[in-house]
Image (cartoon, rainbow, N blue to C red):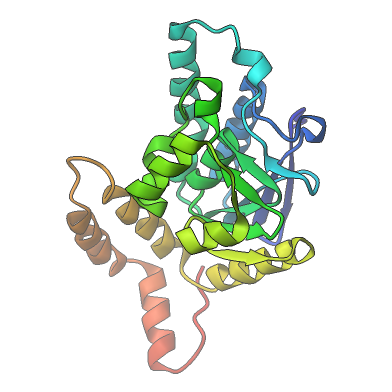
Length: 258
């Protein structure tokens, strides 16, 4: 498929999905969100793809935010629809994606950009990254899950401060906060991401899919994450991956998961 606002590369079981609007610092608009959803839907069905890496084109920005020019004149109803559709098509879709999704944060990750990174299962940032939710400086609040995911990652107090002050934090501060997992030089970002990807690929992706769901269930009101874990743990005993993994361990061999 030919995309206008993203680029997609698939190699060695890994899909690299890049927001490709460098002149706009990869800002998100409705068309970009739709393309992200369409690409992820295809990648979900593609059994040859095991891991997705989200990033931005160029060295300046992962995603510098939403495209403000697109919604500056929206009504209340249009604004609510913008948030609802965006969360459904992209942000919640990524958070609950059955395959690992890693955000490679290269440069600015602001507003919707940070929300996109937070929707990923975890984040690796370059040292030039700047992260923040500046929406209150525009008279609005984060609308793509920022008020929910940021406190989960950094704690309520830090989330309150970041949103109230609209300040940007550095990659090192984000690492200290627990907002990103690793920080490296910009030119080493691909190498660092690939090193983590290779570790993941050595494990049972069937088990990882179950773990993603169990972890996410623990953050859903009315859902008992412990019960989800117990059920998924039991189901794992009936899989070929369990047989392969335990047999390889007992024979002191490396597992070859299918």
